Image (cartoon, rainbow, N blue to C red; front, side, top):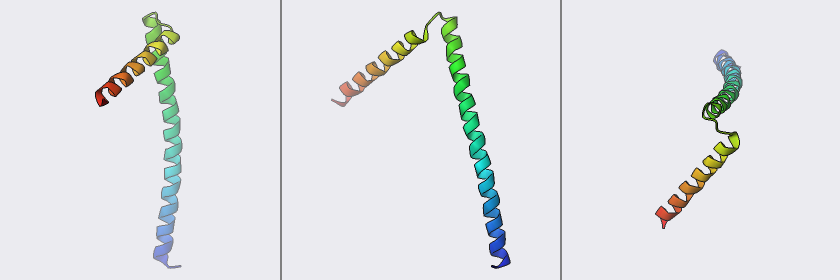
Length: 75
């Protein structure tokens, strides 16, 4: 193989290794973000004396209301 081809292959390998590390770090950060969001939701619920069940019911009702509005707008 030519020297240039070896150089390009080495750069590709190094970049693939960096990409794998970044993807792993991103995955960990996304998990941490999800956990922090859940903690924040729980804190807000406690502050407002709302149970998670009540919150989920409200969220589901809102989703259903939006779906109905969307269907009505389409018709």
